[in-house]
Amino acid sequence: MVIDFGNLINLQKHDTEIRHISALLENIPFQITEIENKMKTSAQIIAVAKEKLALNQKKRKDLEGEVKDIKAKISKYKIQLNDVKTNREYSSLLKEIEEAQEKIDSLEEELISEMLSADEIEKEIKEANQKYSQEEKKFSTEKETINQEKKELETQNKRLTQEKEELLLKIPPPQTKLYLDIFKNQNGIALSPVKDEFCSMCHMRIRPQVLNELKSEEKLIFCENCGRILYWLKKSAR
Image (cartoon, rainbow, N blue to C red; front, side, top):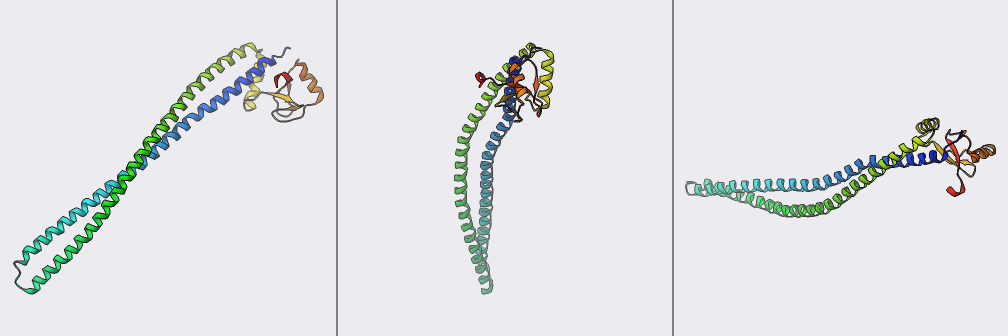
């Protein structure tokens, strides 16, 4: 029986390349997801800073409202001063006014502190927006590159698959079936070249008699250890 080693070896090369391309294609969604997650993280930094600013603004508004209410009380107390009839009542109102003014001073200090914090937060938002714009361009370019690579890989995969189908038609059916069975059971590698008297896949030493039979290429010989189809790697193929 004539063994079609040439096409069998070529078939293995096609299958190996197809598997490699398939692995790359399978990894692309994860690469894109990683890029999108990085963009989300950058956007989240801006969102957190804006939330901080919103809380700051609310607190300032509350403080301003509290100061306004206390000032209204002070105005009320000052009017009441004109109506008091005893020194005790007068002194009591003055104390209320003094304590209210101290509270205003404390609130205004806190308000100034919050205003300074707002300046820092606005600066943080501006820097985060600038960084996001830069990263968005970078991530967009990376994503575009990956999608372009995907198209190229899909084109290669389609070509190799078509060539594989043509090769399968050229190889005798029994040899094709044998190849596919070993391919399935040996992790996608059905053939193993013999290098320096050893099986390249499992490194089992090949007996001298088997080596001579391999060189004749007159029959299929299997590795006694891994079960793959052995073939002699000619010097011209190295």
